[in-house]
Image (spheres, rainbow, N blue to C red):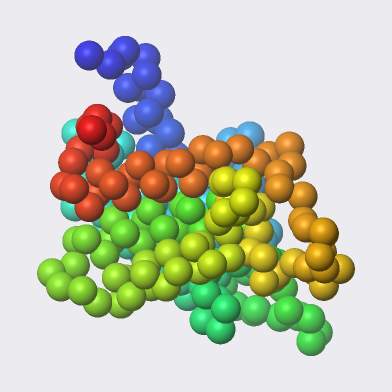
Length: 214
C-alpha cells in the first residue's frame, strides 16, 4: 500500500501538470513563477513526451479517468510531432517555440540537435499511443522509424550504451578517425534508454508497467 503522503503529493503534481502547465494543444510550459504561473519562453519538447507516457499510470493510481489521461497524452504527442519531429532526418529536436512564429527576423527559433533522452521519452509515448490504435497506422510507422534511427545513430556498439546525440549531427571534426563526441556530461545517465527498453518489453508483452520481466 502506497504511503498516503506519496499519493497526496502525486495528486498535487498531477493536478499542477494537467491544469496549470499543459495547454489545450498539448504543449508543456518549461518555466513558472513560484505560484506556477507560466513564464513565456521556449519549449523543451522532451517534457510533453516524458510527462505524456506517465499520465495514464498516475491517473490509475489516483482514481482519475485513464481515458482522459490517455487523450491528453495523445495531444502531447501530436503537439511534439508537429513542432519537434524532424521529417527529413527523423527523431525529435530539443527545443523551439510551442506555437507560431517559428522564426523571427529570418532566424529560426529552434535548437535542432536531437538529444538521446528526447528520443527515449518520445519512443515510449509513441509506442504507448500506437498500441492503443486498432490497427497499425501513423504512430506505428513513426515508432519504427525512430527505432531505426536509434539503432543506426545512437547505439554505441563498441562500448555499449547510447551516444549523447545523433552521430549524424556531430560536427565534422568529431567524425574523423579517432575522434568522437563526449559520451556523456553531468546530466547524462542510462535512465532514459533503460526505461524505454524495459517499458517497451512490458508494453509489447501486455504486462503491467511495474511487472517483473522474466
